[in-house]
Length: 196
Image 1 (tube, rainbow, N blue to C red):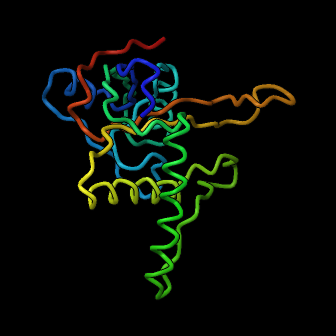
Image 2: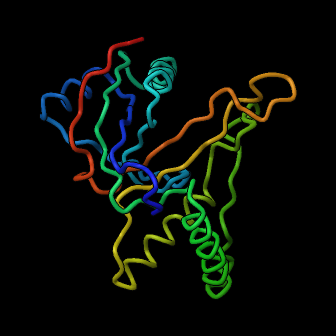
């Protein structure tokens, strides 16, 4: 990780009110996501420095009827040994890892193919299903483990999403920084986040 910034950040996580209250009361531990399309690989996902985006996501989960009451918790996160995908050295490492994954898939043969990123639906312009990205990040974690090297505690990346902010813009409406916390010890404290 490039240590050109502080290693403590504030992250925000959308969830149901029931889960959020239990997390704050220390009656529940945070569950890591491990879906094959999680773009930063397995971990507990947070929006860095963006409680509004966490509220949007939690409200969207209510609209999908995943739960009844939206809630957001904040967390003090120590990035620790971070695969920071906004730092050149981490990007170069992931690029080399991709080549390693391609070689591994080629050697395996027998119809095994490299997964592809894809759309979550016809209106998805951002390729939200990041199967390939997830596979590369997981391959990196496995390679480090196999070599007995220090694992990454967190993965941090910039996600451009939502269409141009204005005509001709390179800025996107929902661009955000997300963190996948792999080591729960990196979550130093959590707190309630009021709706803005």
